[in-house]
Image 1 (cartoon, rainbow, N blue to C red):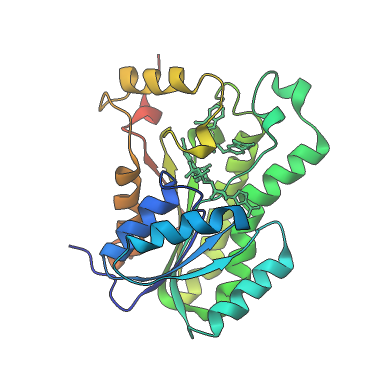
Image 2 (cartoon, rainbow, N blue to C red):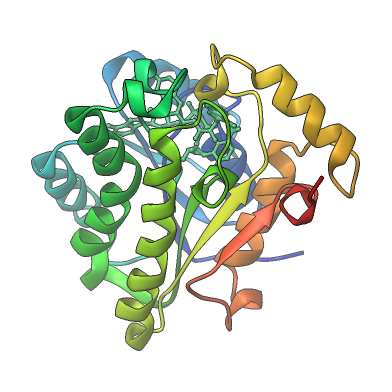
Length: 257
Ligand code: NAD
Ligand code: 0WE
């Protein structure tokens, strides 16, 4: 059993009980970490509170919309009131305007849509690291979530593919920047999972079917598959791993035709 006793973990991206961030929060909690959970807006507070009730620890719950620099600065101030240092950051956040997540890439792309997708889905991870840098302990671990569309063309993923490519490059530059502090930075590229971020995406069920048919493990992945990898990357068992994108996708990314 991996122990994260005395480790403090900031988990960003809980929107429902199905969120990948919810599964990761539960895994970190079970390993003994002390949690700080953030939510994007007031509509989500009651859900996060309900999820927190099922945890063994009592997490600090704070609001933070990552599109705002002041909200990121305020988040750090509020955390510093309670904790001198933190050890783990989970960034499980992505956003693109819905109209840009279907149909023709070139017909639907806009300058504003490009900016929003890259701002929330890539820049925000570095913005958080920049803000928290000085209070992250040595042996710290930063983890974000990516998707195959960063590397391969996935129908309808469109602008999010570019944003995830940026996020994965961001992971490498952040890893190089934080390496001298002995802080590691990695991405988990997860296979498709039915969460809020997947709801209403046209063709999502077909993607699930293709993965279960073609992946080496002949199945789809679940939030536990991702959470267990996050637990490993957060722990010192992964002490030599940084700057990587680790696929947790039942092997789907290695297969062709
Ligand atoms: P989700 O909808 O539960 O989580 C997305 C989160 O992003 C939500 O909590 C939402 O509040 C947050 N968010 C969006 N804009 C924000 C902002 N401005 N400020 C703060 N938070 C903001 O869905 P999920 O599937 O758990 O997604 C989490 C991560 O996993 C995303 O990065 C997503 O790209 C990635 N991912 C998902 C899948 C999948 O199939 N579900 C596969 C691979 C990677
Ligand atoms: O990263 C994602 C989705 C992220 C996402 C989801 C939404 C839906 C609601 C970003 N922005 C929004 N904006 C909204 O308004 N995934 C990996 C899940 C996903 O989304 C797809 C996929 C997969 C897989 C979209 C098209 C094709 C495949």
